[in-house]
Every structure is written in structure tokens, then in C-alpha cells.
Image (tube, rainbow, N blue to C red; front, side, top):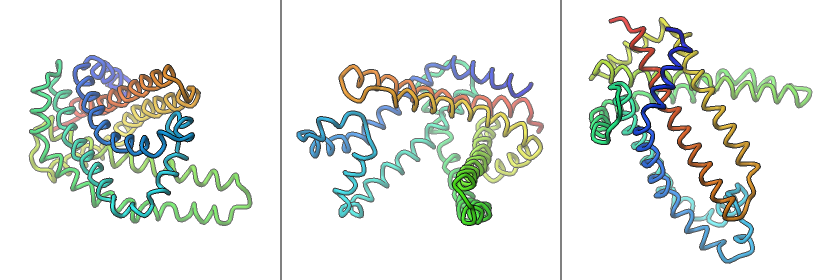
Length: 288
């Protein structure tokens, strides 16, 4: 089966599993409310009764900069308050991945009991996958990306105009994204292998995945990038529409809220699509 057929089958799987999309959306919204509420209360306290508050409108980075400047002396004290939500999000992300992959691999409609059962079943295994990924990302960010960026930075330093600098900086960004996509794809396939074949040894799953991806790298990466292009397109559409929305008014706020929820659902759908295509690719090509 070709990559486009696998992509089409994955789209059908992601669209058909609307129960999974709904539960993930509710969890995402609930988590966001917990994180955003303190910031909202702080903004209301500082700007709610001022002329700035009257014209604040939609979120702006200038407002965030003003807030950061106002509380710059408190940043070390609230570092823990920033770190804790980040760790909670990472833990939630790892936890939910087990449910997503488990339910997609099982097929059929998703019920809440089965979803959370898979979340718990694969949690410890996926935590070990995450711990294994940390030194890999450390090597990539600490050495490989710097090594690859060195000639580009030398080119920018010796550039005679703005065009070479723009080309070099964009090329550096593209190379970084492509390398990170390869690493993320590898660990995604590790998780898929653990679920599909009920793997319990993470190092064994890593070795098996490395062998599997190594023999089919171009096809596997091409499929991963196809789904990634859908994410880029969805994000671009969201930003374009957001930038043309009016900044104030109840109607504008209501439409912006609905548009943001549509984007969240699109991201969730694409996340399910990533795993659905990887599961199909694995089942079609894996040779024991």
C-alpha cells in the first residue's frame, strides 16, 4: 500500500473516531482553563479598570511584554509556578498518548473506560520512552544542530547583503525542523511498536524500531512529512483568519473563540492521524 493510500485510510480512521476526538478536546480545554485562569485574573486586576484594559482586545505580545516587565523582579520566585504546569502538561501528554494509540490500534469506536485503561496500561512504558528520548534530544541540541549551523553562521557573518542572511537563517530553521521530525517520528514508531506488539522492554522496542525504520526510512519519513504538511496548513489558515478578525466586540470574541476551538480540534485530529498512519504503516510493512 502506498503512502497516499495509507494517508487516506488514516484520515478515515481519525474522522470516524469522533468519540476519541471529543474526549481529547474536553481534556485539552479543561487543562487550558486551569493554566490560563491565574493569568486572566492577573490581567483583569492590572488592566481591567484602565484605558489599556478598555482597548486590550485580543491577546497581544506587547501586553505580555508589559506584564513581564512589571513583574520582572518576581520571575525567579514564580519560576516554580511556570515549571509545574509544564511538567503537568508533559505528564498529561505522555498519559494520553497511551490512550490514543491503544484505541486507534484496537479499532472501532472509543469508549471512555477503554481509553483510560490504555492510558494507564502504557503509562510506565511511555515514561521510559520519554526518559530514553532526553539524552537523544540533548545530543541533538547540544552538538549536532550546532555543528550543522556553524557553516551557515559563518556564511551569515560574511554575507554582503540581507538576502544571503535571510536564506541562511531560513535554511537553518528548515534543517532543524527536519532533524527534529526524524527524531519525533522514531519515538512515535517506538510507541506504536510497544502497543501493537505489546512490547514491554523499551530498549528492545528501540532496537526493533531502528531496524524497521532503517530499512524503510524514505517511505516512513515521507508519510510523516505528509501529515506534517497538513498541520502546517491548518496552522497557517488559523493565523491568517485570526489576523483579519476584528479586535473587539462580543461578536468578534465569540467568533474568535469558536475559531480557536476549531483549530484545537484540527490539531487533535492531526495528532490522531499521525498515529493512525504509523500504525497502518507498521502493520503493513513489519516482518517479524
